[in-house]
Length: 159
Image (cartoon, rainbow, N blue to C red; front, top):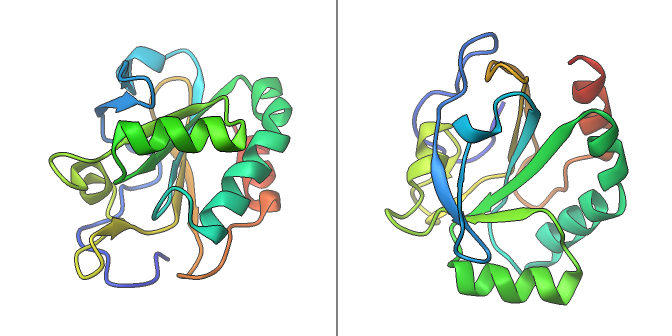
């Protein structure tokens, strides 16, 4: 499953996804509960501006229409501050919510079982949540490897 030294249990497929509220890159609160009625793709990634993460975020940006077709909202979460995320979104033209799991540091990543205590960051974990808030799929990639877009497509097709 999730490679590295992630702590905690991954949420169970078929169970309600752990709820959260975080600030996006503009300081606006975004909660999972408020998105009921839409599928949600929660994408944890280590850091803004890092090469593999930027490649992944830009691939999501370039294929955002596929998520819209599935009525799925993309929420990308890292431990960066909202200020870093605002600069990152502007630099890369990212038009989906980038959420700051900054303080308490990595709290939401811990709830999803993808926080790396040794490195102080989220691992690459993706969680597909249906419109009723139920976790339907999850996938990850090891440190240093991007998640393939085909995994997102497969998960969205299963909604």
